[in-house]
Length: 146
Image 1: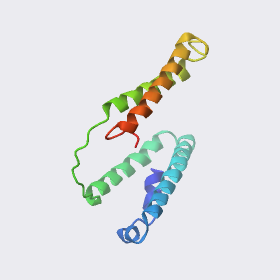
Image 2 (image 1 turned 90 degrees about the vertical axis):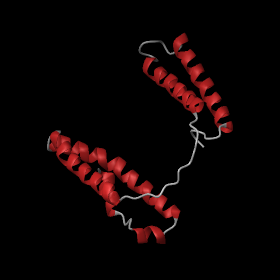
Image 3 (image 1 turned 30 degrees about the horizontal axis):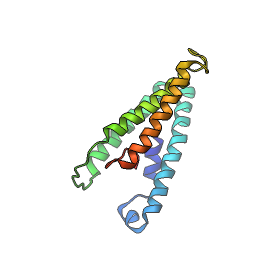
């Protein structure tokens, strides 16, 4: 919600958007995200510690509903339909690599020793999947990560 408040406070009128460069708009978007990412959890913790956990909902639900109504009412986007294929193989390779790394971090040292065959096999599989992903993405017509 802090991102919404900060984004509202930053001058984002159509006149401002026409007068500034794309780089400045990008910097503003990153600043809004950074302030919201740090300020949101801090405010949430402050509300939870000092007002009670219910206040997080008392504040965020009405604010979210108001934001939703404003977006539905005022946000318009012109779009052009583009036929694009989904990179299923690239997505599967990426998900497989991430899953192997996650299993290593969860199982390693707790369920399996770090030098066990399972952990080493998962690390090898994740490296192979990342390599296959990089090779595939260089050739893909519509890559997951351009």
